[in-house]
Each structure stands twice: as C-alpha cells, then as structure tokens.
Length: 298
Image (cartoon, rainbow, N blue to C red; front, top):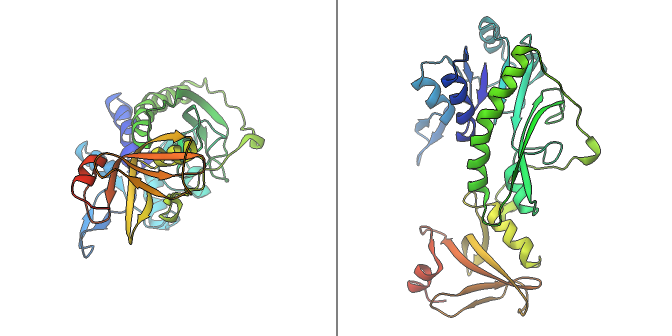
C-alpha cells in the first residue's frame, strides 16, 4: 500500500509500479477545490498517476474513519510506504505485518517536520539527503533503515534540490522494500540530541528580515524559491524575490532600497546588500530585474 499526495511522491510510486512490485492500492488526500469559487476539484499528482496505471485509490477525509479502515484492511497489504503524506494514526501504521516506513527528505534526525528541503537551504546546510525509517508515534522519530547523502550546491534553490531528492527517493524506496522482503533489514535509532525542526511554512514565515546578514538573507530567498517565495514590501505592494546575490560590504540602513533604474535593484541588509536578479511584483508575472525596471519607475 502506497501513501502520498504531491509531485514529490510520484517518483517512488512510479519506481514501484515499473519495478513490478504489487501495489495493492494508493491512499492520497481528497481532491482539492480550485478556481475562483472552488467549484473545480483537482486530483493530487499521486492520484492522477495511480488512475493512469489503474491502481485502486482511497481518499479518506479522516484516517480513523471506520469505513476507510475496513477498506484498508480488506486490501491485506503486507507493507505500507509513506512519501510526503500526513501523520498516520497507530491504527493505520501498525496494520500491515511488515509495518510502515516513511521516506523523508532529510538526514534524520535533522530537519524533522513538514518542510525539510526549504529549511536545510535556509539554514545554510552544505548537504542533505533522503532517509527511510519505520513509523512510530512521534513524527519523524522512528528507527532509521537507510540514508543517502547529497550535496547542496551554491546554485541550488528549493526547487532544484526538491527535484534531485525526488529522483533519489525512487531508488531508495525500492531498495528499502527489497530489504524488508528479503529479511535483511537492519535499523538503528535516531539520536534525539541531534534533532532539528523543519516546521510548516506559512505566509508570514516568508517575510524577509533585512536586519539579517546578507548570506542568511540570500539563503532565505533561495530556500523559498520558486515556491512559496520570499517577500518584502515595495510601497504598498508585495514584492517576491526568487533569485539574488549577496554583496557584503558598504550598505545603508537595513531595508533601504537602491536602483539605477536600468538593471540594478538592491536592498540593504545587516552587513551589505542583496542584489535582486528575479522577482515578481504583486499582480504581475515573474520577471528579471531588467524587465521589471524597464516598466516600473521607483
């Protein structure tokens, strides 16, 4: 049984299907209302892929709902695999005889939580990876099965790192399944003393603090790019910044804006300036600084 919702979770499901593993069903989130009035329901990427492959799809509103639990039991899965889904109650994760494992986009116990990719970049990490671990009560705390490390490059943002880890997750999930099926599984507990958090990101989380050093602001911007986007105010409108370069050195008061009106747009930070390369003004499309300044008088 496979459980996941976003695009990130499709790669591992595809690897299982293409690898000939018997996926008896898929659990994903209910269709999401979209459009101006929420009148259109949009299926998750995992559901779309599952339906293309003719897999049975379950979409419970509540994971403790008895009708859902009965349907899940009836599928008689030997193992459950979770990739980018929601927190499972014990009645679900303890159901299959081989248990339930999760594939998480960090080197646990670092970056436990909903947004490990974003926070690893925001906090200036030089490497991260994927971890598979057995589920237990506390979120992201179960015994580790396997880990794979990858570097975080200076050129990375949350989008590029997401795509690399998504590809990596596919092979790691199938390798973990093989270990479980062959009975060669060896796990080890997480070191709770080394744990760090990666909490869910909200709109206010994404507001840029220009009182921080330039490198920290730059990492903040790339850790939230391309989605949801770090932002600041420009007049009475929200300005999202997707690409930047840090320039430590001479600067004005933090938050001070400078532009030559042609190709340079900079904000002062605590120890220098952040030069903006790609941005999006509220109500406009994403564009380069040059294109923005060509049509905007500051």
